[in-house]
Length: 101
Image 1 (cartoon, rainbow, N blue to C red):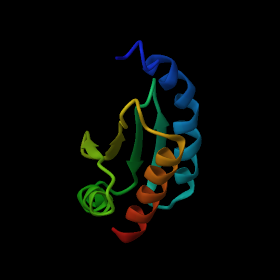
Image 2 (spheres, rainbow, N blue to C red):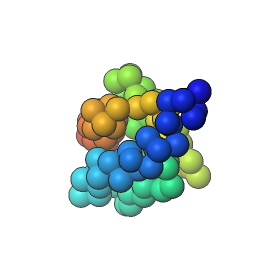
Image 3 (tube, helix red, strand yellow):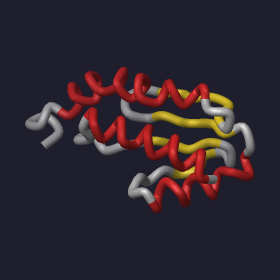
Image 4 (cartoon, rainbow, N blue to C red):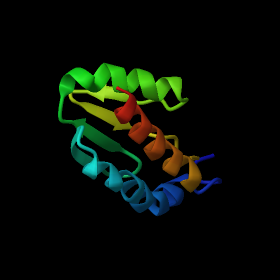
């Protein structure tokens, strides 16, 4: 299935899109750092770690699953079949969740 659906190639194409959609979150006052890693892995480090759980809960309430890593950051790891629009939605929801927390 991975080969038939060209998922490895798709991830390579979407990797810069994930970084592009997460990058604007760097300017949010609640964000200490934004990292887009290899493939479709990304993280948004919060300036105040006590906000981590409220932001996770707010994102989940809006339909986006993220998880905490090291007690200070949100991990973003969408499935390989994610669309560019869904990547934008993920970033938008994280922004909304940061504002709500």
